[in-house]
Length: 167
Image (cartoon, rainbow, N blue to C red; front, side):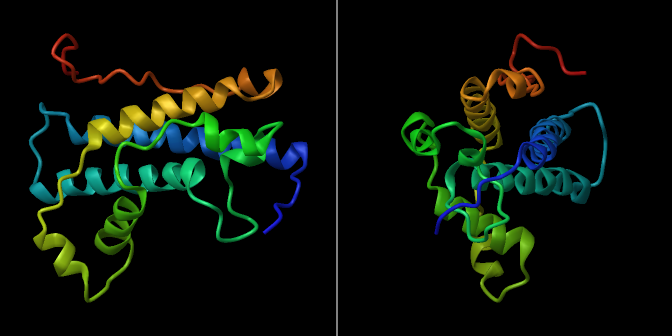
């Protein structure tokens, strides 16, 4: 499928939504690990789910071929779209398996959901977050200067490392 060339206005608006996904991913991650909040288990799971939904959006943006013409992907923003596939880092987990698990457990009620839940799926939130934010920095480095200055990427260092006190 040949991608439709996007206007500067469309790309500027889309970049705002991409930046939101980065902030939401980071906020979701930080919410998962806030240890100073006593809350019901369901609330902790909701934070993990929010994190994973934003992670899936960013995985699709960076790594998945678009299904629809209006799907936003990294290549749309770059002067040489084909370079992105060779420039982006390899995702450290199986992208298809991760997307399927997120879809089955979070986005769709299916009869296969118990199958995924029984696997005691081990979410690697720290790995996913740091990789996606590092990939966002690489993506940003490929943007034209006028767009690069408008995009702020959260710091990929883990805010809960042993040297960082919890808020």
